Amino acid sequence: MDALKELQCEVDKRETKAAAVAQAAVNEKAISTSPNLPHPKMLDEYITTYCELDDTGRELLDAALDVRHNAYAPYSKFKVGAAFRSKSGVAYAGCNIENAAFTPGCCAERAALAKGISEGVLKYTAGAVVACHPSGFTTPCGVCRQFILEFAKADIPLYIAKAPEDEAAIPAIGDDDEILVTSIYNLMPHSFTVFESKE
Ligand SMILES: [Zn+2]
Image 1 (cartoon, helix red, strand yellow):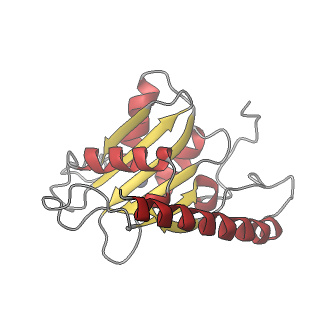
Image 2 (cartoon, rainbow, N blue to C red):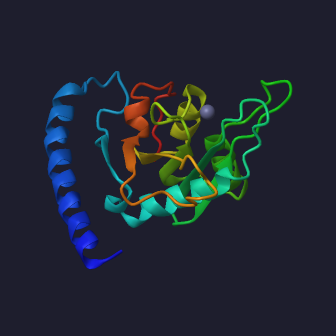
């Protein structure tokens, strides 16, 4: 990245942060504080560009894009990659896995988390999802949202990107590509819970 682009990126980051602070004030008013509802506090949701992301966001998106090449999606052709960062800083990536009988299939988000969980890692601090849908960002399905929440002790950011249309020609997410930065509480503010302490 040349110096001018780095400078522009820094300006964009500051503008994004200012917008996020303003949005946070709106969010605080909108979220219920009832003790009978879980998750009274959630992270901000906003759209930014790849170059404006922090290292964690870029690392996870890169890992998700990379593992997406292994997606087993012969029926829908809809390839998805996901990656989650553990509390200790290790990234686990997974792709979607379809099945001829349909229901045994597994989403990329659960495949990624299953890798870490199988190694005894139960706490995650961030996640990313990459798919290619021309009309919008692909966020985790309802099942995956509930699954992710089981391993998120507090709200965690989720970085969502569209995969490049031409994978052969553009093997990476572009610096100026839009990224949706949301969070698991934004996607599922009132999940099923046993109302037990997660500490
Ligand atoms: Zn899913």
